[in-house]
Image (cartoon, rainbow, N blue to C red; front, side, top):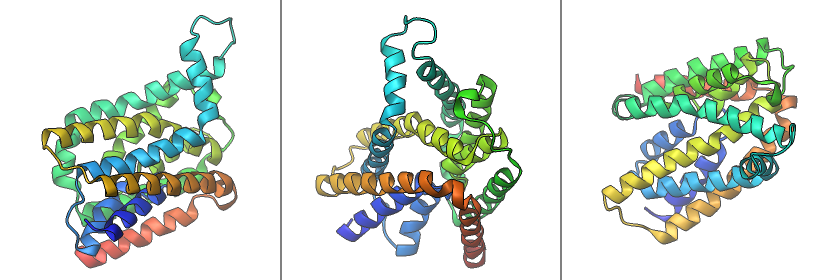
Length: 266
């Protein structure tokens, strides 16, 4: 790995992790397009940890309410109710992907990390995102979600194991189908990424330890810092402008990307 490889990896991770365009697809395609060897598990972990730190910092106020509930579970009625509700919603929404990943992760990695699958998933789930944005009522906020709603969003998130589906994209799609506004759908999707990215990073780190992977500290720390900075800017930009621009620009990008990949690799 060289400095350019590390920098591009961090930038691609930072841009795509929380935009509805699939980070896994772009991270799979990057070494194919650039004819690079795989960067290794520990560099992947560093890139995802950078994104994790960025979302933790951006939503520190929401997480503070959640943490306040966890630390004071015996508070008076109504005290920390927002944090309690958010904590339970995130818990229920995380369960499906953990179960699916436990049983299907190896199969998905072996059979779906190719350009054709990425192309088809990018187009299909991109069109679903557009339909949800078009047909959704955009009238609910996160605190109005029920346990059933959280489980449905969690089931949608499990589809993100397929490269090209986009974890952010499928969770926003489900949230908007359930009536959330664009901003609230994005906010819940980003918060839901915290336990998901943490679990994925912990699993990758465990695999790296088993494989006795060599730690490239100079690249790893640089990737972490760059990924975190780019991720933070992308989260801020998306939250700021999504209500105005909608999902169509991201849908068009996904369809064009899928079409180019089908033309090149079919």
